Length: 300
Image 1: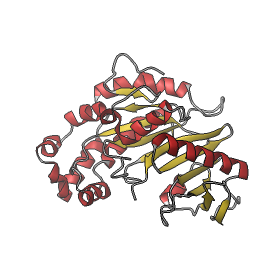
Image 2: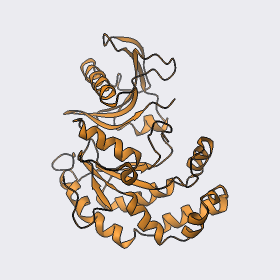
Image 3: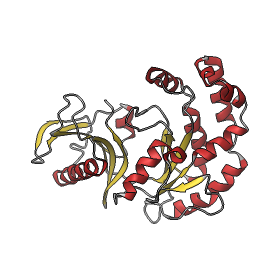
Image 4: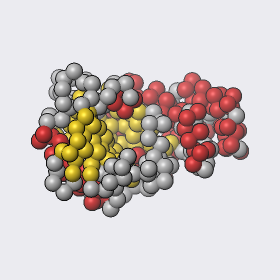
């Protein structure tokens, strides 16, 4: 889908056309890279860092942040900035630019034909999902939203750039205190039967001849948040054989059938080859196969 002509600085479609990561953030750039390499991602677009800047222009405390990003280390200032972001409505140019692509995305929904469109709204900070810092789980993701819930979710994603955890993470990594800027990915929600997180290098042992898969039924939000225990599967890269399996706590049994796991392993190897490095991927399996939700270089 092409970018809407009326506001190219605020909206960018994730359709494989070259996009500057400084505009769409780490997650948006990674998704667009996957699309450009021919992998299937859910249809969607980014509210770019230009939208964030437009919002920031009218925000109370914005001048304090611009003059001294280190002010975020002061808890009352950090809390005031977060509250100011959450309290308002979308800036007029952002709201105007969002309306058309959001309607078009709803038309491209992956939901059943007789069901309302369900969407995912995901943060995409400029420093996120790079080779040096992943920010995994530190910024907001919201799933299963209706179109009328997107604007508030965007504000929550932007505010998560200044969460106490995100600010502390940047301080430990020696990164700019304010995080630079935040884009927001808005995609059709995959009606997932199962969701998986996979590492093409074992994150504990460091073995590059094994893939570690964590998988759980459904959308995977509970798995990522740690409220359910996923299946843990270790696969030999060369043979595709399962060398270790530890069941999770899902009452429905194994999250992935053998053929679905085999397909995921092939997908992992293809992404690793395309990126030229070991990767951590998130993927959702629907009735029509796997969709990639994210891929990032393994940073630890």
